[in-house]
Length: 155
Image 1: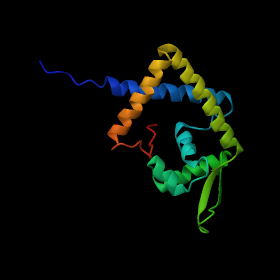
Image 2: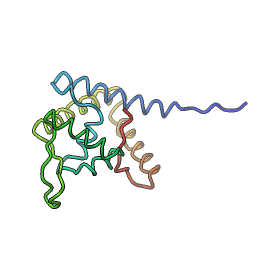
Image 3: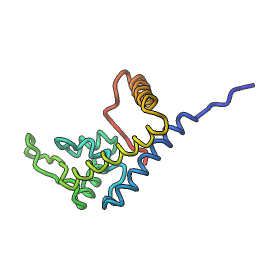
Image 4: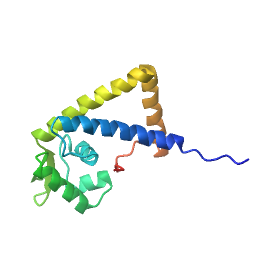
């Protein structure tokens, strides 16, 4: 009898990530950040702490320059980022976080810390640390010994 391929691990990893991100955004919405989406948080990761060009954001998220520009437009209209003259390229612009953007990041850190603590209470601190270390090892091994520097959100 042939074995049936199992996608259980893949599904559990995706469901775990989606569960955490959805819960994060439910909390953010109650704090007045109902206009940010998961992809924006990943863009914030690239922009903080020193800013990033539109091209750097596009490369990090593995999206087109046009899509990155539209995202920056959206975030700028909502007060999360601002475009400023690039410090070394007179023709270029650098995207930096505003106070609202930094406040959003601080709220995200608080919420994710609380959510992770809830998950840790379920499986225990030792198992959570082992899970984190194992996932880091697996992702690093699958990427030629380094953690990827690009991140393309699935939603």
